[in-house]
Image (cartoon, rainbow, N blue to C red; front, top):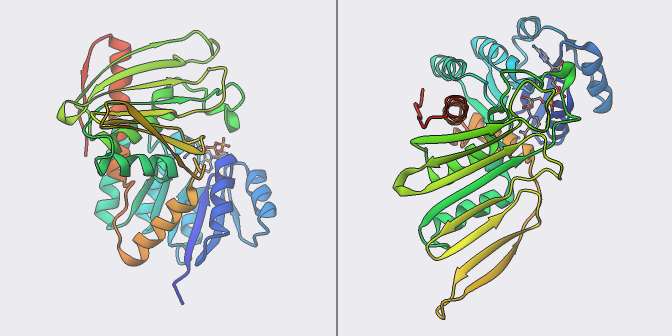
Length: 339
Ligand SMILES: NC(=O)c1ccc[n+]([C@@H]2O[C@H](COP(=O)([O-])OP(=O)(O)OC[C@H]3O[C@@H](n4cnc5c(N)ncnc54)[C@H](O)[C@@H]3O)[C@@H](O)[C@H]2O)c1
């Protein structure tokens, strides 16, 4: 019989509910404690999932009281609590799954990576696009040469935030630039497929969510290794359905994929010079949190390598911060990777 891994969840809001849904279904997993600064949020999830576990309003109190009961702390709080909760959980000796963005600040990301290394513990970051079936397929097709040599990669994060401000309006924060909070998904996806960009030039504007303290729209261009160029667009005020449409152009074909579409379009060069379209069916699973926790479980129990490590999360935040700097200064920015 496989070992049971004991989880404590910190952050019992909307996405905390998505995590609990998965964790209560994943075999060999047990929830041992819940924590949220709002006790009613804990109680709501406790009741929804029929759990008989203690609820805490202070994660430090939880970590001390449950010190012999926890294997993994799942951090699904608003972004600014990711770093303090993760550092405390690692310090207490537990592996951590931390939602994206790892932090809004590169210095905090570095501290989190260093703490995990110092303690010899696993730190996984919820860059869930690396588990979305369509994006997994796209990476596989690029890797096996199906579109020849990649030369241009674009992705986007278009998601109307008007009605998803978060508990206590945490998303409406001058530090929560959309390119970090939301488009970290698109940037992480392109990094995963095209490698680490060397520099970026970005522009942003503020015409839709005019009562929010950040620019709501940004476009950034990048230089990736091997002379691949790329672009990420983000809008958090857009009047349309949520999308992460991604297009990968190669010398012998093109991939068009979206984590909300049930098909991937693969165009390939035919000997007669035309482009032939194959439609590849996909499962839509843009929040494949089940796969994330399955991978974390394997890593904890069997030492398999993690794909979305703290280092990867930190490097993605570093790219996001460079985009913010470029949009603010109007100048190209060399990307400095902290870890
Ligand atoms: N991977 C994805 O695609 C995805 C999707 C949605 C949200 N997220 C991320 O998940 C996190 C939570 O988002 P959400 O939509 O659930 O927000 P939410 O506002 O619904 O929930 C956040 C919860 O965290 C709690 N919280 C804040 N500070 C805390 C602290 N110090 N200790 C304990 N609890 C604390 C709040 O009270 C709230 O209940 C965010 O970081 C967000 O970026 C990721």
